[in-house]
Structures are given as structure tokens and as C-alpha cells.
Image (cartoon, rainbow, N blue to C red; front, side):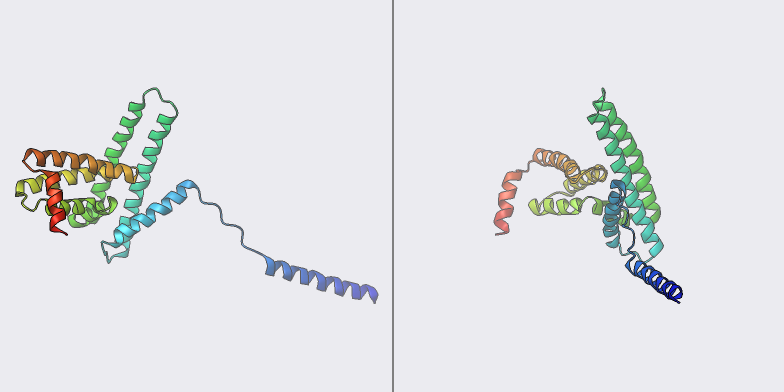
Length: 213
């Protein structure tokens, strides 16, 4: 009798322990994302914001464009990282590392723009490019026209052409600083052309400030 009782008690105890273990079980901690995974998440989020402005109604198309942009960011990141690693490791020919990176980026740029053009109309491609470069082209072009309201059509075309060329390089910049650096370089060219055409940009800034007071 006692033996039977002990067996029943033991069985109940085991069942209770099993139930407690089941109730107390916790999911295994999620694996810590690698730096590559974390960067991928960042650029997918960035690409999604750019594509959201396009207001695409086709979900599959929207996903393809997001993937194209994110893949481009990742490819640029990898190329820049390889270049920087070669330079920091004390490579004997640092310029060769820079040149190799530039070749990869030029090829990647052509592929990216062609793929975008297959997915989007010209206006959509332009909006993606602006989204990747903080909208500097339309903002700066409008600023020049406010600064110099009497610009000739020829000079307007010159300004826009230089800003668009700067944008092509800025799209592939590895950082915000590098992207803005390209625009700064081309704004210098624009200002030199305007000065050669007889415009006093310092005076134009004073005049604009007076007009907007």
C-alpha cells in the first residue's frame, strides 16, 4: 500500500515538474544581427522611404525598386569598405586602391540606373536620384533662381546641368559628407561661371536678404 502511494505521489510530482517546465519555458534569445545584417536593415528602411514618395500602386514593383536601391547601397558600402581596408593596411599603392574602387562604382552605377529605368519612367528615376541625394538638385536650383532672378535661359541650363552631373557622383558617395562634397565642388564651378558672366554673388546675397526682410 505504501509502495503504491509513493508511486502515485512520485508520478504526480513528475507531472507537476513537467508542467512547470513547460510553463516556464522561454524562447531562445534571438541571434545578434551581424554588422552586415544591421546595415542591410538600415538601407532597406532608407530605400523604403525613398520609394514611398513614388506612390507606386503595384506591390511587386515597389518591392523590386526597394531591393534595387538597397542592393546598390550595399554594393557601394562593400566597395568603399574594401578600399578603406586596403588603404588602412598600409598598401604600397593607395591610389591604385582608390582607382579600383572607382571602377567598381562606375560599373555598379551604370547597372543600377539601367535597372531603375527598366522599372520606372524617367520622372521616377529622377525622384529616386533626388531621394538618394537629399533633394539637393531642386533645392539648389531654386535657390540660384531666387538669388539671381534675372538669369538667362543659357545660364539656367548651365546651373542645372552642373547640379545634375554632381548628383550622379553624389549618388555613389559613401557618406553624407562625401555626397555634399560633390555638390560643393560643382557649385564652385557654377559660381565661377556666374562670376565670369558678370554676376557679383556677394552683392546678390545682400540684395536677396533685403528683398526678404
